Image 1 (cartoon, rainbow, N blue to C red):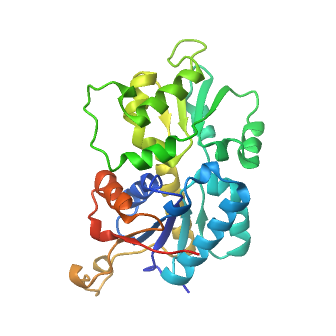
Image 2 (cartoon, rainbow, N blue to C red):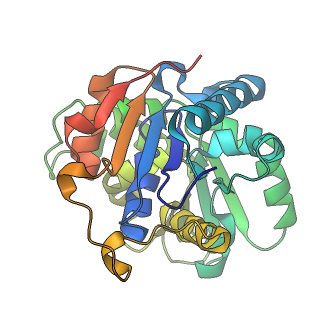
Length: 297
């Protein structure tokens, strides 16, 4: 049975879920994490539901059996939409947190009543997303834009030099895709009829916030899911009595020497390890030694 000292599992189709891991690390710095990027099978957003569900089940089983995780964060909107209800049924005792585009938080902050939503096609055409939107009918005007290829381009960009701050947005592949999709959505701003809120419905998209900001202007609010997911994960662990309390905070218990402590973060990938190493260093300031390649049949 998992203990409070057991790790929390986190997975995504690729490196985009590192944005959620970053929020989890900030909210629970004393926890251990095992992150798995299923990059050999990415992008999920352009796969069918059956394929994504099969991968989600396989990865859940792998993390439970090989790493003894005490909770699982499905840091992927597409996998959540395709499979989280099945995972809940097959692992009823596992604390489980999924993602969905943060439509309700966007409704709480929009002033113009016009909200843009960007995500993968798999997420935005899913039955789960359709039900969410139907439940909010009439509460705002939504412009929903699938961004084919953007998540994959963000993954490829981690191995490239960071663009100069004054370079045109369209100068990079990610910037050109952002420009194409933002322009297709319509007018952003705070005037009547404009979209004043943009929901980032894919974990990758926070990593192109700079490009998106340049396109929509300084006053548009971005809504993403990392921090709410971290808060929900902490709540579930507390409720289950599985939140880790460091030894140095327990009476009569000496702290664990760092040299003997289990590494707090393990980063695994089913694809090329170089991509994960680059992303970990660029986005989380973690060393390449945290990363390794694995096979998940």
